[in-house]
Amino acid sequence: MTEISGNKDRNIPWKQFCVAMIGAPLLITGVTYPLSLIPQIGFIAVIPYLAMIMGGPVYLLFGTPILIWFLRRYPPKILPIMLLSVISLAGLVPIALIIWAVTADNSVMAVLLGYLTYGAVFAAVWSATFTLIYRWLIRRF
Image 1 (cartoon, rainbow, N blue to C red):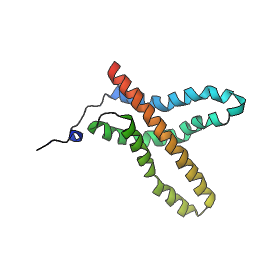
Image 2: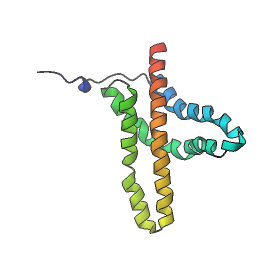
Image 3: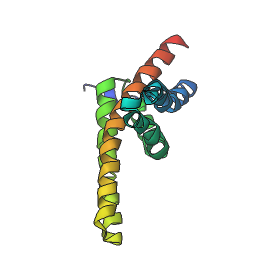
Image 4: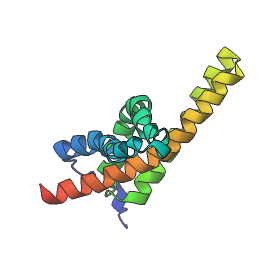
């Protein structure tokens, strides 16, 4: 019987995983911070900083167990991890709908939709950055 390569359990180097997990949002925010000093684009460059503050806990809370599950079964590749992060974020849509149903306020739904829209962008960017950092660290150390 042919063995499926995704069923093998892989060891995760925890130091590299933790550094990449925490380092990805910090790196993206650090790289974009100098843009906030340019007056013409200052406000737009603050968005990654706000995303780190608002989305960082969600990224760590939901992203960590999902990435652990994925990396135990599959090699770290950018596109599958990016897709997994966006699909995982889509799992939060029912929670947003429940919050909207409980509050019955359209402005709350607008905020939640904005939160999820920016979240989809940063989920993809942070997960791609995580994958690059993680692969670099496991090759180096």
